[in-house]
Image (cartoon, rainbow, N blue to C red; front, side, top):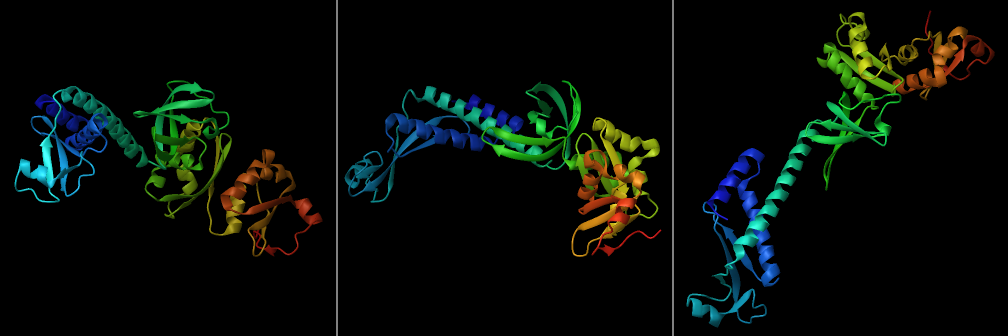
Length: 358
């Protein structure tokens, strides 16, 4: 190695942000291992690379000992004083043992170390880039489809959107740009692994943050989200400003804001309701678009009994129970729904009436 090699390391430090000194330290360590492989595992040596000229020298280091048990790492006091009368027991005697043909080995070793360190540095940079964006929305480009999994390019990295993280009914084509929720970044031996989702409820929240300035600035707050990905989402919102309608802000002029989110979610229906600290009011809102006659809360439990008009029963429950299930997830209450006639035939006993007053 020579000054030209040192210059190349200087350039690499600027372009790849890899410390030249750390690279040289790593090369020195690797050369120590290479020397021991050829000249004895018990050898004690120190490799020094001149930081200006690139010149490499290898020095054996032997401890002055009364009894020499390891000739590769120890030297007798008598032999040491033949080199210099000043040596005492415990001193270190150094000798230049650089092989005449060591340049080729050094070059190969340096190349291997540099390639490895560049790979590690690039992986570290990718990990730092994406780990700082965990729980955020990112944009990717679909590259290809493999066994129902989407291979998506996000920046300098390709990641997999597995089938279980794809919403039902969604289809994509290569080259299409899609929004993803970055759930987690793991540092593995093969490099950073970015875990993304299209089914996570937080995806809906992040999309509304993009579309609704009142959410982005904190005027409107998303209190909870319940999602049947690919089919329907219920979202509860509240306003911190009495002059701002939370639901209206999310819907937008002529539905422009909510429609932008629906388009990104490939047509998924979105119900936006007002949040309330009053559980009765919140449960009523959560069952929208169904009308609710009354809500009875069971004291000491998170269960409630809801009565709706006879003609609204199927709407309140929803297809395959979806509306009721999403309402329960949104509010955190177990909801038992009956029609008005069913409630008259089998009135709820032992429940604390907290029904809506007409």
